[in-house]
Image (cartoon, protein in one colour):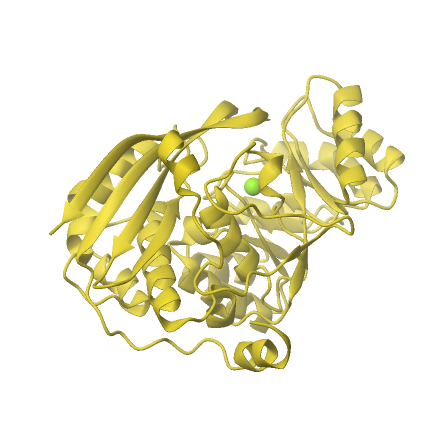
Length: 387
Ligand code: MG
């Protein structure tokens, strides 16, 4: 798709494709993919990405989705083993022989509490299948308005400030114009101010993954000097009032990540003054369609959003690029090149150009071809459910 036809199709997005098929089977795959470098964050260290991907099959069509739960429940209550169980025994049986229509997936799964990441995987696969069959892109379906997005990179914890500055210098050299640093107690004001001093024009923000207490807010006001885009999730996920109190102390906008699990939680957080920015992760909110609803809600409240990341493979990564092309994604997100994490991805890779931008996929569905050889090599468990 290119030129005028692409623009005109995108301008008419959001309309659902007509359901014309039923889900006849679902294949679950558990993958193990080595990371190009260890990922250290306040929740632990990963040297490989264990992740579930799934394939939804209809009569003559198929689509892929990704469950972004981590191997341990350190980011949210979901984790790989739990997601495998809930998909196998609960969620997949609830959609088998149901219409292949993404708009009905969330309702079909509503009896199961939580497990948003597992639900998101099914919805994305159904979206991908129906859009591939219809020949239209996920970006168009979601209402994307941009043809390229600005990439952003998240940097895990490092041993020393020198290591941090080395990594930042390398990534800036690759074209990245925005970076997010992980912080936690004992690793915050000094490394962040050092990063700002060395990279005065870099768009910079920090993420605490809920590792602070409200009593730390006065000390962390020193981060205001770093001119950050936002401070992400300083307090626990359920502490909206604490975040509102923190926001009143600091010039840097507060962004919420773990706290936002639905449109309702986003509305509550904004109404309470708990955040001025929202990180939208489709997997954390149960799917891309709910993510779009949160995007629209935030736009109506004047709250900018950006797209978060969960060390996605190419399936979730291409879908995130499509989502991040919606108009209120006015801040660059954690959407980086596939090569930032994986030497070989299971799809055609997401690529960042020297200007630090990524092309929004405009092929059918997620807009990327699966690399079956890489997928085969990464698969450690495989299960077919259905006819
Ligand atoms: Mg975060």
